[in-house]
Image (cartoon, rainbow, N blue to C red; front, top):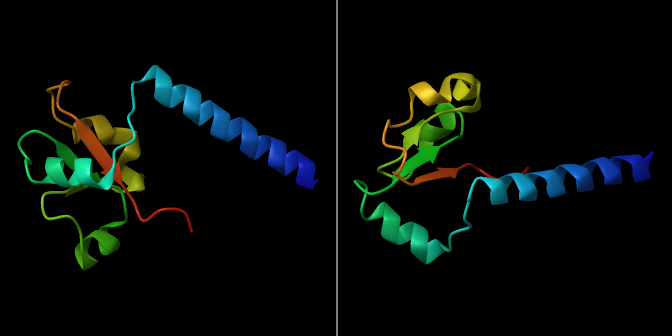
Amino acid sequence: MRIRIFLIIALLLSSAAVWAQNFNIADLTADEVKKRIEQPEKTLIVDTRTEEEYRQGHIPTAVNIPPQQFTSIGNHLPQDKSLPIIFYCRGYS
């Protein structure tokens, strides 16, 4: 059973890596994110936590798009497809 779970997790992780490469998704350093936050007109910052977590504190220029709204996420994103978007969440728990 543990081997099966491990294999499923390994498959999901490798699939995510391939998906990210296909869509040109970059990992950013903390310094790169800080620079982008300081220029909100050049980058959209999206907080993907729940509305309650967002209200408790968030990056000042971030907009909140919680997981419940992911099915209609296109309605919340800018029409300018060249605008970089940074998504953040609370991480794995």
